Each structure stands twice: as C-alpha cells, then as structure tokens.
Length: 65
Image (cartoon, rainbow, N blue to C red):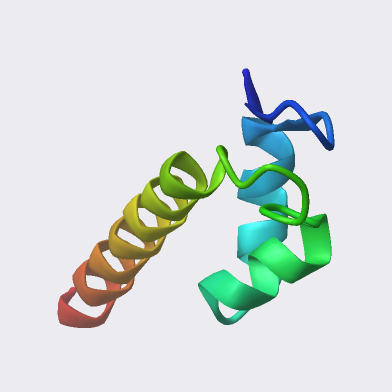
C-alpha cells in the first residue's frame, strides 16, 4: 500500500527504513516523507510508532524469558 503518493513510498519501504533508523524524524528524512504535500505524515508516524511499540514488547518478552 502506498503511504506517500508524492514520493511513491510504500508501507514495506517504511517498515524497512524504520528498522535501520533511531527516530521518526530520521525515518521521514531518509525516505523524504512529508517533503512535498505532507498528507502522508499522520499515517506514517502512526505506523512507525506501532512498529516501535511492537519491537519494544518483543524485546521485553525475550529479556524476561
């Protein structure tokens, strides 16, 4: 699914960029999200936060095992 129509960035590209970036700003800068019309930002930020939360939960579960 396309997240950013202006830059033709998909959800898969966003997921991959999120894995190698430390902050939401870094993900957006690396992909160019929000650099045109900005309509993608709300959904992109939500997706990044959701992925970060899932990653943190997985890390916590592994540590407690």
